Length: 139
Image (cartoon, rainbow, N blue to C red):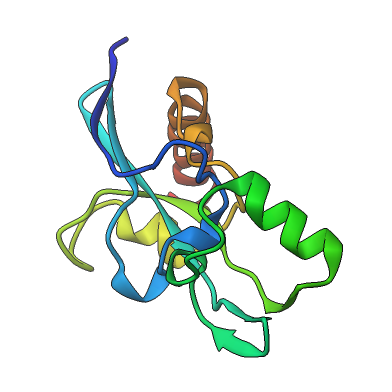
């Protein structure tokens, strides 16, 4: 079994998905496990008000540079959240013709993650095992 990180755009002290735009559809992290590639990226809308201005991404706010800054602003009431995104893992695929698309289309990859570092060897292994169970059940 082999696991390696192919690319990683995460920034130190910026784990919360609200720092990354889901509209860009750019994987935050891509890994390879046993010859398969998986990615994690933010999903969902972000909308919050900070100092009477509406934002759609934490990286747009100069005063909020880290997860700690975000928590402080949120807990103090200076930041009011309306929508918060999350992370999801997907197999890397070219298009809907990928043999892995059926798993995504049937909701196998709809698990929610809150840390991009959750895309690790165990997570990859668990998804591959879930695919095998799916194939046995629906073959």
